[in-house]
Length: 118
Image (tube, rainbow, N blue to C red; front, side):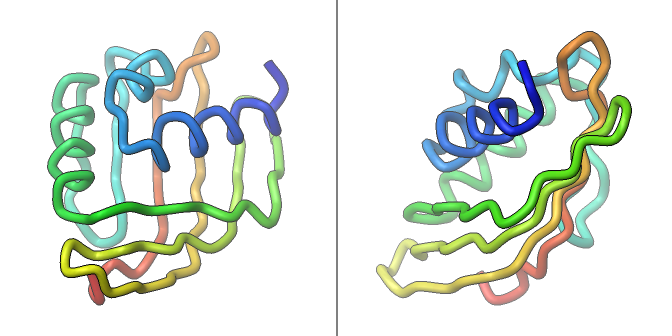
């Protein structure tokens, strides 16, 4: 799968769908995940649990991908994410994601975004 399709499938189907069952096939068993200034989470189950908790803390989200840069085993992307909070109010933030792939699965998943307003 090329990097554009990988990012599109990851964000549109799994992340924006807030669906950990769709997210699971993207992740290596030993994945490391870090978002914002939170501590890293390690291991597929722990990462899926952390994402589930985050998904439950918001009403919805939709990513607009502006750029995708493949580089060896890494894929970097950036854009804007539009959140709807549980109270129905909205918030937008810019983000950048750096993924490292191993055997077609994400082994390192770093998201740079300011989530303090959520």
